[in-house]
Image 1: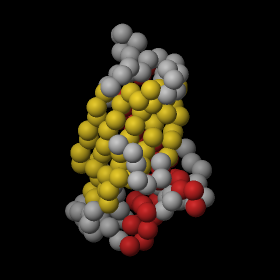
Image 2 (image 1 turned 90 degrees about the horizontal axis):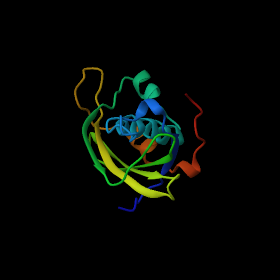
Image 3 (image 1 turned 90 degrees about the vertical axis):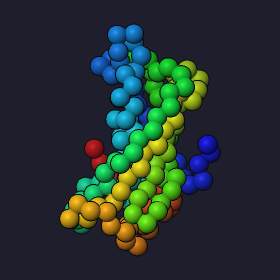
Length: 148
């Protein structure tokens, strides 16, 4: 699926400890890579999860989908492409593609995560205009935040 919003690309070198006995990337590590890329997408839009938490909001994952199409192995260089696919009243969906740069840029994995914005009472809240504006930012028009 071709994204309709700007894409952030996070490159990751697959570490030995992220593989199974067959030398393939362990399936659950894709969720960690999705998280890393999602954090980069937020920084590209000028905010972080930490900055959301500092103003009283959290954005927990409430749904995950992953479709594995091809292999990723130890020491492969991958790129996790992430974009904001949909924003609803109180939720946001990020979509992901993992491409294997070592193996010619082949699409290896696709997925998405749904997140619900919760307030200090740990209940879903409507996304305020200022947070919606951050989600809607075009990373090419915004200075990327440096961060860990």
